[in-house]
Amino acid sequence: MPVTEAEPLGRSLVCSGCGRDMRCCKNCRFYLPAARGNCSESQAEKPSDMERANFCDWFSLNAALRKKHDGAQNNAGAAAKAKSAFSDLFN
Image (cartoon, rainbow, N blue to C red; front, side, top):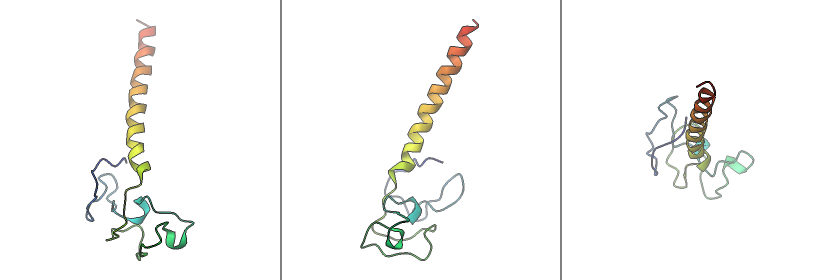
């Protein structure tokens, strides 16, 4: 589900679709599974659970989570336009 909330995201914010914490390591732009502690920010402390909300000062929402929203809107517009063009073929 696309993220539409403005930053900074609050620690208690949860996804309206799945109920999971939004401000967690896996949603951060610094999350990198190949890095030490799964974080590319060298000064960040590793929390005990990367899928739960934490108080990391380095948290910044991964831009890809917002792009999904933009893409979904574009896809919906393109689908509506294609459907309209198809209907026009028979009118």
